[in-house]
Amino acid sequence: MSNQYKTIGLIGKPNHEGAGNTIEALHNYLTEHNYNVLVENSVASSVSIDNINSQSLTKIGELADLAIVVGGDGYMLGAARVLACYDIGVLGVNRGNLGFLTDLSPDDLFEPLAKILAGESKSEQRFIIEAEVYRHGKLKSSNSAVNEAVLHAGKVANMIEFEVYIDGSFMFSQRSDGLILSTPTGSTAYSMSAGGPILTPNLNALSLVPMFPHTLTSRPIVVDGNSEIKLVLANENYENLQVSCDGHVILAVMPGDEVIIRKSENTIRLIHPLDHNYFSVLRQKLSWGNKLY
Image 1 (tube, rainbow, N blue to C red):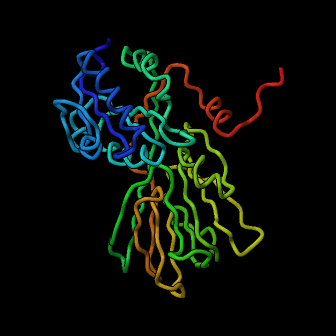
Image 2: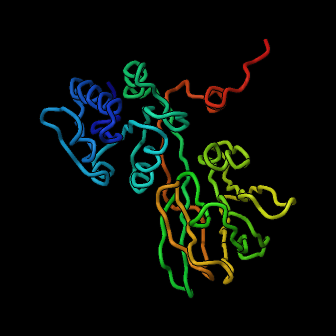
Image 3: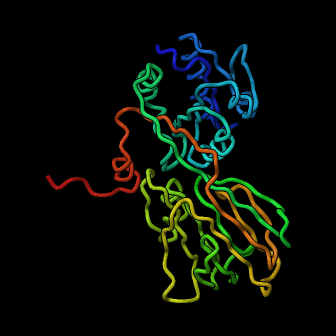
């Protein structure tokens, strides 16, 4: 085995039988190969492992060289938002549904894992975004998102009114159910379901996808990833508005507030097997056709 990874953190969905079984199998395999193994607190309490070294997610970020996340893309996103603050590689084992971010299968795990631990892998940096809510010029709340930040009403099928500025220049005003601001990583998630474009991960770009706009001419638009995007909420909106980060973290928004979205200084370092191919993943997950010949 390579000395590239000495300490490995195991993160998984707690109280999930499949994820728990995979965590236990990974722990046995890694300790047998003399790796220092840390297990995240929430899953450590739901698995049967002797002499377990239980640590918080932030401690894993500080101490480990590699984090293996067992679960679906949603759980991967939650871990990645925290781990983006640290210099750590992240590898996913799919225990969810589609699994765009989780490369390894629990049914065929240890052969590709052995190659990755031996240094036969490739890595890529994925940027994340920060969403900030300002009220009367003062920062009220903020959080990060790997996939997308979504401005929306607190109730289903309620239109809101807002303006969009790109790097200080007014772009449009809109009445709609909201707006999805997606990274390339998130372009195969909620944004895609709303009719947004798929952006390859190497692009430095953000997509803005209107949600049920009250006009036939409103279309998704892709802007430079270094752009600062400002959303200004009309004073006529009712009070129950939100910005959702990856569908998990909710920031409350009031009429008249400004929402600033920009690229974060932090990135996520994803670890892939050498044979990983983005377009092959798309074909498999989205059931696209095979080559004709």
